[in-house]
Amino acid sequence: MKRYLPFIIIVVVLVAVIGIFSVTLRRGNGGGDPGVDLANPNQPAQAPGNVPAPNQPAPAAAAPTKPNVKVSSPVVLEEYGDYQCPPCGQLYPELKQIEHEYGSQVQIVFHHFPLTKLHKNALVAAHAAEAARNQNKFWEMHDRLYRNQKEWADQDDPRPIFVSYARQLNLNVDQFKQDMESNLVDQRISADIQRGASMGVTGTPTVFLDTHMLRYEATNPDGLRRGINVLLERKATS
Image 1: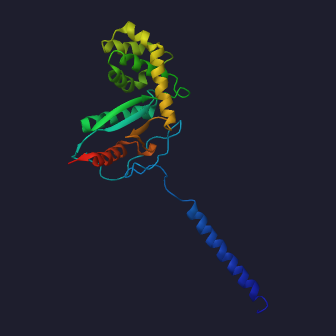
Image 2: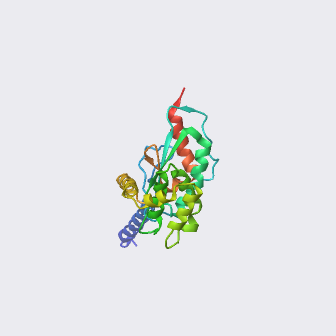
Image 3: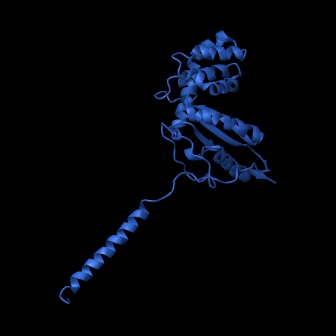
């Protein structure tokens, strides 16, 4: 028995080492999301991919309420969106609700980021919105494009539908048609795309709060409000 004792000790030691290594490996494979912490929006965010996953459900917690504070300047919420993007269409009514709730405390800005390789009519829709801007009806056209997304998204040529929206808005239809094809409108959209790309935008919707890019999974009703509330508290004036 004494003759085999050294071998038995070696086997026991090897088994122990293998067990410790396995536990360490399992721990190393874990980890949380490295994106921005909504309680600390200064942390860098992970940009979404070209085909974003659906919005994840909000944590099971009480919905954040608007802080009762006065601010020297509003929180600027910038969206990079695509009018044919389904998640953008789902986010649209939430942003309208936030605009209603927060009033002058939040300023919403929309930037064009049409994903032309995925959405065949996204670019022409952006042209329609910018053509309406020339007659001071950008937001009215913006709203119609998102509210009626399913009506025009799969059309071979959605222009007649967009012209019908222009008539509903009492726009000068001839000017609207000309502006849809103008170089100036195209340059505005291209400038938005270039600006977004320079800021790390790769998919839609991408939202910035006072220049802080939100994680895609935080771009939901509760996540947006939590981020806005944090920034409002920081801006609070006595």
